[in-house]
Length: 470
Image 1: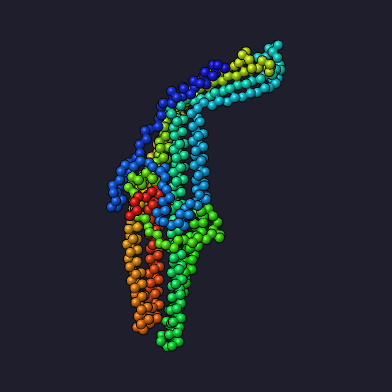
Image 2: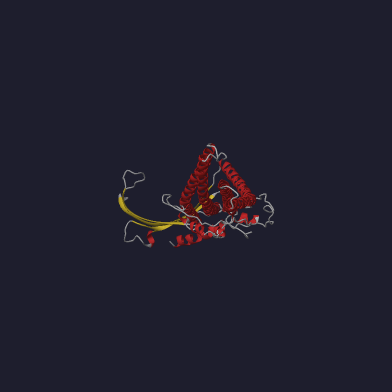
């Protein structure tokens, strides 16, 4: 037993001595064509992975308390819960893989009554036909990681766990952004409902006035039909706005993990301003969880190449066994009943018809695939940032033009109302100009909704990080 104890203590030291070799290629982050800056913004510095940095409650840049309260409730989202479970599975898989670096110890005990046949081979007279065998053993098995196969498999599991962590962060960011986009769209729809309600009232007044003027012989009957068409179109738009608001409300309920039935949401009445601050391109690479996930997939694939290469080399194992065996309980645990065995083995494949070469090439090509996926992810990230920067710039100009149109229509409406009160105009003219004001306001609200969506998507494209507000 003392020999077994010495061997068990020596095995980890042997493993540490032998595990210095790894056949995985040295990992280097592949080069990706990168812009010096986004549009007219400052040049970037060299990126370092920082996807684990806290992004904070980025939605607070919009100053909307209702949105802030909704974002805080996203822990009930079922997709997030499923992703969190996948992360915990990956963590458990990593823990199990790490255990392969250490020896395994098994202990067994048995007691059996054995009856032998007198007709068995090598039977000699006087050998007992029946006896009891009591056995107590401890077995230690260990595989020295001579060529780094086990270490690389641990590295694969570790990177897969990090991929799961990055995927969870990417999902959380995506859901947060989706909630913000839906919220601002709902806010716009609720404004549209009020505008359309006023528009329906105006068009109804216009219809009633047309009927009165027809009865007085001032206008033809066709004016009534024309006014009725305009009114019904306004009512149709009102119903469509109501449908869109309900659909968005149901979508928000789903994101929060709540039943759509009975879920009601009133947005803030104020008009938020879109955020258009920037981050350096290096910060984009550091923060985006999908880029981090793609890089960790590369690292796992790189380690897999090392695992494939170990198939060309021997696989070693060390074993030690010790215990007690006796036919009687009285002298079972005693020195004469001791038994032990020490052993080592090596196994190497000498012919496999090219299987190892094919598997190694498969691992290399999988690594090349992850490199291409990484580069594509980075390029797509730059595209998303540029798309939303361009959208914000263009929509800001469109918003300014539409605001001027609304202001001009409002001035015209005030003038028409002033003229009417002074006896210099008709009430019909006042109604028509007011309708133009409501239509201009309706377009202004639609542009504002698109601005807010582009702003949220820009923050998402930047990985949930943001710089100084402009």
